[in-house]
Amino acid sequence: MADELTARMERLMGPLPGADRRVPLDVEIVDEVDRGDYLRRLISYSAEPGGRTPAYLLLPKTALGGGRPAPGVLALHPTEHTIGHRVVVEPLGAANRDYARRLAEAGFVVLAPAYPLMAGHEPDLPALGYVSGTMKAIWDNVRGLDLLDQLPEVAAGGYGAMGHSLGGHNAIFTAVFEPRIRAVVSSCGFDSFADYMGGDLAGWRQDRYLPLLAPGALPPFDFDELLAALAPREVLISAPLGDTNFGWRSAARMADRARPAFAAAGAADRLTVLHPDCGHDLPDPVLERAIAFLAEAIGAASPRL
Image 1 (cartoon, rainbow, N blue to C red):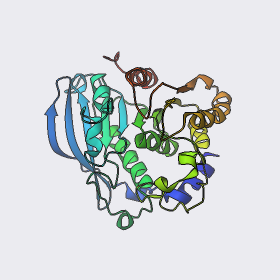
Image 2: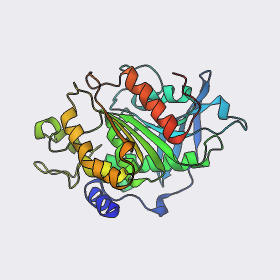
Image 3: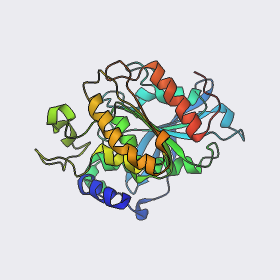
């Protein structure tokens, strides 16, 4: 069933790259800043032949120099056309978009890759063999997990993935393809494609997202199926009551349709949906809940909230 779903996703996103694209990561450190409890490195890594991906890597000092390895998390950034992935490591955008910083302060090793075709990160998708920015982002995240696998500061075992808005559905898409992700946090990340913006999917048809989506057509999959495919993993969804990007009723319906898959896997309590009373946002109580959720799901020191 999972293979059939990913085949439908690949019809729209393009194929997930194969093992032949797993070149040495060749990690380069561009810059390093001491942030007190952790080091913040701006790095790049080789995601495939001819393609390098910028990312921030946040390393708690307690995990450095033979210290205790910490759990690893992908912090996937929201739409941000000016500072890109920097928005998740510094309090420069809207409130609480700097969740990579908050995760590092809570004791996680955090990798925050840049999303393609945004804020100056302009990979040549056709030359690299991609038909969509979505699949490029998925593969960059997969290679990011390969990078975390190699770090002595990272505890062995499964990872978390957290994102807001664009980062929220990027986390879900990646987790469907990547079993190493054991826990997913999606804030303001989706509703049913049929409900998005009253049925106007023009926003999804951009090169950075799903350009093969024909006008007037719906994707050959929806978020209820994607969520169901994550069972029995831990999933936390925040769908605010005032979100004008992704409707909360539609998001709740997607989650409800996925619940039988979690129940069948003996994991009925592992799909949690929150409806904070706010707009397209990540309020403090939800961010705190998300950090605690990841701490419980993949293990971490007690979050310093």
